[in-house]
Image (cartoon, rainbow over the protein chains, first blue to last red):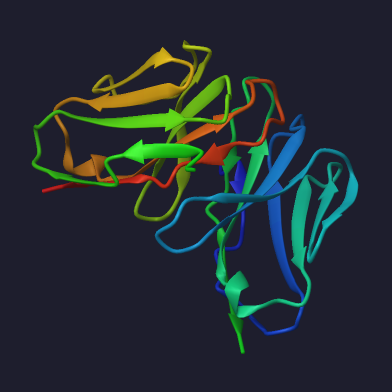
Amino acid sequence: QKEVEQNSGPLSVPEGAIASLNCTYSDRGSQSFFWYRQYSGKSPELIMSIYSNGDKEDGRFTAQLNKASQYVSLLIRDSQPSDSATYLCAVDPGGYNKLIFGAGTRLAVHP
Amino acid sequence: DTAVSQTPKYLVTQMGNDKSIKCEQNLGHDTMYWYKQDSKKFLKIMFSYNNKELIINETVPNRFSPKSPDKAHLNLHINSLELGDSAVYFCASSQGATAGQPQHFGDGTRLSIL
C-alpha cells in the first residue's frame, strides 16, 4: 500500500484558471506536509509547507490540510504556463524529518 | 551562490564499476540527505546524516555507502554498479532533523549504467 498517493495526471487547465492538486496519506500520525514543484530535468523546489488543519496562503498558492480525512491539497490561482511542472506531495510521518513523497501530479497549463 | 551543490551532474559508467557522488551545502544546515529518483520519477529517501551522524538508513543495498566528513558535506559511494542503479540521485539539506524542517535539494546527479 502506497503511503502517499497522488493522481499522476496530466491535469490540464487553461491559463488563468485554478488548478487543484490533491494528495492523500496513510499515516494518521503525520504532522508535516510539503508541496514541491519539479520542472522536467530539474530538482524539486519547495513551494509550500503546512502543519495544521485549514488553509495556508502564499501568493497564488494555497495549501489545504485536513488531518481527519488524511488529505492535503494545493490550489494554484491564475495558473500560468510557467506553472506547468510535476507537483510532488511530501509527508513527514514524524521522526528524523524523513519525507515520504507521492509519485507526483503533472500539471499542464495551456494558453 | 548554489545552496546545495552536487558533483558530477552526469555520470555514465559500466556495470561493475565503483563510483562516488559528492554533495556540499553552504546553508549552514545540520542535516543532509540522499534521495533516489527512478525512471518513474518516484523520489525515495536513502540516507540522512545529522551533524555527521547517520540517522536514517533505509533498505538500501550494502553497495551504497554514505560518508559525511563534516556537516556541510555528504558523499555517496556505490560499489559494483548494477543496471538498476540507473537513476537521478538528489542530495538535500535541512536546518535540523526534527520533524517539519523544509528540505532543500541539489540539482541532482544523473547516473547511467551501460
